[in-house]
Length: 84
Picture: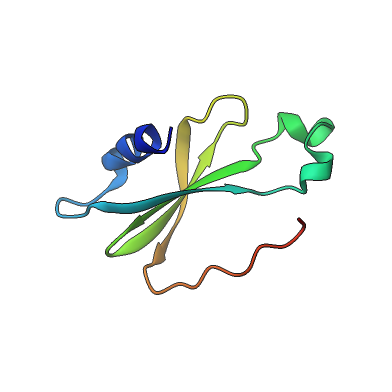
């Protein structure tokens, strides 16, 4: 699955950029995932390259990339997980 998401991210990369990691992130508390929020876009796919971190929106039922929400510098620190 992560390999497929990485291949989908290729269209958003620069000419010499390569993906180093693909990370799935959930944007809502898992306790509420079966409620109304389950119909919202609650999954983000992060594609990490040597230059930047692409944050992409994905559907909840099908993990397909919809759009790039943000491109962050590679040095951006991702905080600790919370809401577990």
